[in-house]
Image 1 (cartoon, rainbow, N blue to C red):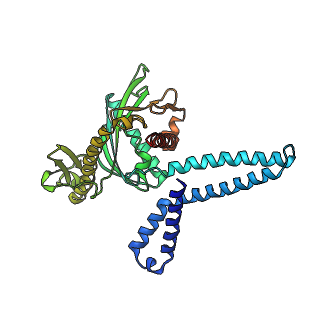
Image 2 (cartoon, rainbow, N blue to C red):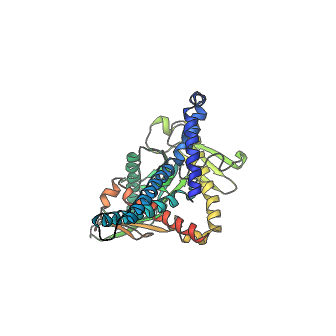
Image 3 (tube, rainbow, N blue to C red):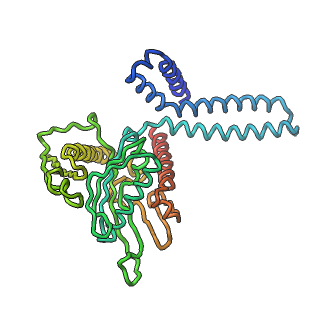
Length: 359
């Protein structure tokens, strides 16, 4: 591992020299590529250099320990310093092992978010709307952009189904564990007797496909146009601006009616279609590695119940890692990192464990 880290550090220094080269500063494409390469290994190099300093300090402390006599006050101080540095060395080596694990190639990508009301009728639709609001609030804290593609709202503020694109820095890396069934337990506003109802909402989080990820044959896609439904007046309801795309070989259907422009709606729908088809391919690959997936944080399958939101007790429980918090309203207001951070940490620990056991 140490040799590999030395090579990464050497590469980092070379990139820094490239960045200072006048030929790089006058070439925007090369400048972007160089800065991107630096950003990818910057954290590893920073932690590695800190690890080298700790090793140097530890070697010096051990030498000083040999030069002092047991029972001396100085000897005891140095002994405590050695133990402290050994703990730091172990912790930073574990951190480096995680940083050197192969990265998820989708982590940098934007996300196609799909939310659908499940069991529970109108109550499920209301919770679907609240979940979308939660993700929008979370996106605001991360300075991400949320762009609705299609939604089917109910009359009292609920949402039967919704599709949106979330764009920004490392969106998929933060939201990839949100896919699955989200269960809510609460007393509906329409329940006169005060009984607690249980409803469910399905969330799908798909990395946006790039052209290099999946190739589409346009002859396999049927394009239908129709008048958009919902509010919007003449510009929306009387022109054929809404677009429905059907991938005939897989019977995958996507529609978009959010924009007034048919061209824009088609472009958005195509982004969703590519993401869905990529997800199908990914599921095929995951099925071939089912044994490995079971050791990780759930399967990510949208049929799996991942979380319960209990309103009477202000409690959220993530069933994959047994995490419970009583700050339900804070999470719904967008403070989602309280759940995301432990999930990411657990997933990385499982990947590290799997990596070690496979050697």
